[in-house]
Image 1: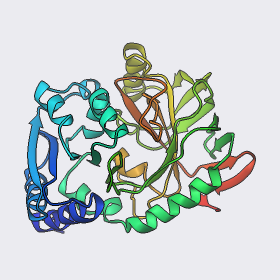
Image 2: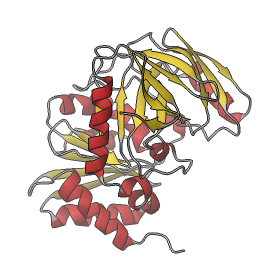
Image 3: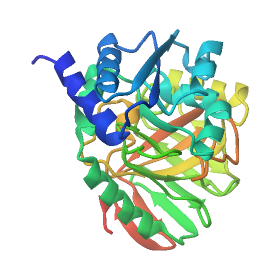
Image 4: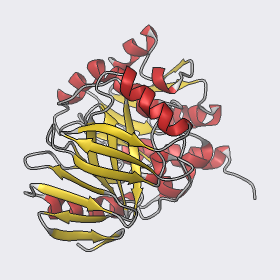
Length: 333
């Protein structure tokens, strides 16, 4: 079966520009890419921006290794600071954002720019699965989860494989990511669909048995276990290149072992593809993270790191102050 074509990319790019970021005539858009990004994606975005009356600038830097994805060229750093709309479409775009945060986040906090991310972009990733969702429905589902978690202090996540971890989220911002970035300070992207928050620093306690993909690490050949204590990942139980890679990151990158996030996917169109940026958005999965803390609603960060890796867990049961809101991956609210 033939894959997606440039025609499909143009259709999606037009939807991104006109609906998701609501580009206004005369606005300047900077597209950040790397040498991994497929040229058809850049051509489609540039054409859609021009057709909507915007001004586009394309900036391409070399592909980085996973542990250096936060390293940006000086030209890219400058580009991050000068745009009405910023679209990241690099092969490691979600990682490079952590390197750019000191430049970009103040502008987002001041509502001077808005951000749209194409994670791990390819034509197929851009046009199929989670990216093809009805994002108005994704947004509504996220709001249901936000209401279920509002005012909650403790969240407990368990699975049949042995996950049993508790986070405290009292007073933390619940961020409903549903792809739209139409006003200054907004963040959107495709694929999208999650309700996420930064747990209270030092509060992650328990263990996570990982059966899904891990950011910066290939999917483990068999489930591996991370043990959390005092908001830090203190032990990795498992053998092979994946666990060894994770141990190396924890030992060499500042705050890489921080328990960084609690999030629930809200996108019913997302598939099990092995690609973390899509799988973490699936309705019925939980993801946590290591490294830099998830941001607050006003673009602050409690625990800083140059890396952030998401960890996908299938079929969770989620209790909010003792009330079950999801059982074995089925949403009950």
